[in-house]
Image 1 (cartoon, rainbow, N blue to C red):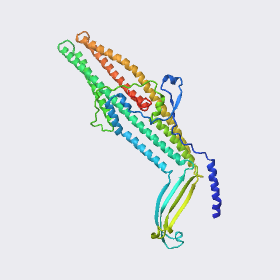
Image 2: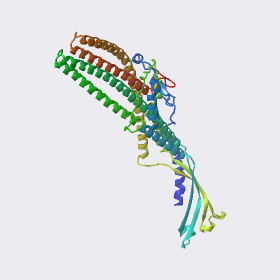
Image 3: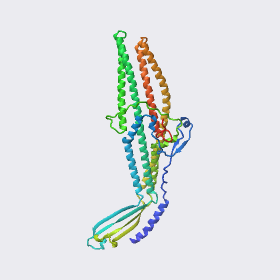
Image 4: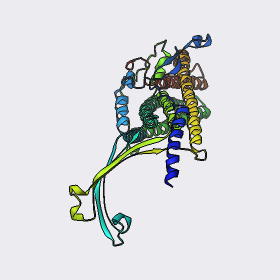
Length: 480
């Protein structure tokens, strides 16, 4: 048996050195500052001409400022602040970030020296008691130390992967916060629009009720037929129905805001602002590199780097692991003699583990890690493409909405003038009631459409700010 071990021990050492020299080295540590390809500018003409792309380093930590203050609405400012403190989605994302950071500390701890205390009291007989068959008591107390040499980077790359996971969770927390801020802003601006539309409908309802009273007086005097009264009554009832529908929509939006700020919908209300919110103007020529600030794009980039690091960890599993261990303390068959100098004991060892045959488990681990890296690369590219689409959609929407708002403004002015003329002519008996009702319906329809276009401009502006990662300036968010 001793001869066998004398022959095999040098053979194992030679095989270890040969395998370590022939295996492919693990992947290099990921570049934490690697960037993503982004267009130089958001310009349809340049894109059609094949404008060059640039590689922008991640900039998710760049300050954005309180972008919602560009709308100059104190009520909106207060709601966004309340959402930042009470929104449950933000709280969940913060908890996931705390978990990722704890996993990072665990990975870092695996690279440190492990020290532990140990002790025991055993009753035994045989070789451990000088060959005596008489049972004896053996007491032990001491410290154990172990340290794994990271010769092939397995532990360091696992730590890098955990660090990138934490960075991705931090970016996702920021993305969640931006999403909540945008949702609060859009819901609030929609609520303001519905309130304005309710006021417009109430104004039209008052005009219809005034016309109904006039028509009933003329009917009692025998100047008009009952059909005219029925027509105006129809308009009054339809307008009342529209007012109730808008009240229901306002209530639903208020409840949605309550959930976003982390409060119960029961008893929740949004104060009415004195002035209309300002509409920020997005300057032309926004650089495409602002997309590097988007937290979701940064999180996708960090996920790619973490997957790359884990490929290196899987490859390093093929290499031998060397662990240094040591222990020191006291051992004595008598408890009273345990801590005497003569009872001291110590040991030191270097442990080597080398994979030779595992049924393909390590190769499957490498293939799985490579597949996850491919999936992360595809997800990152998809995230960048989605970000580009969102920005282009909102830029195009704002450009078209500006023209639509101008045209709708002319329509409102013409409809208002037509109503004034029709009302004067109807009161003097020059035109029929149908002409007046048609003029009022046209004015109400056009004014409501103008409000809806204005609301669409607000929502597209918030959508663009969200798509750009929280503003459009390279530094702090611009203020309107």
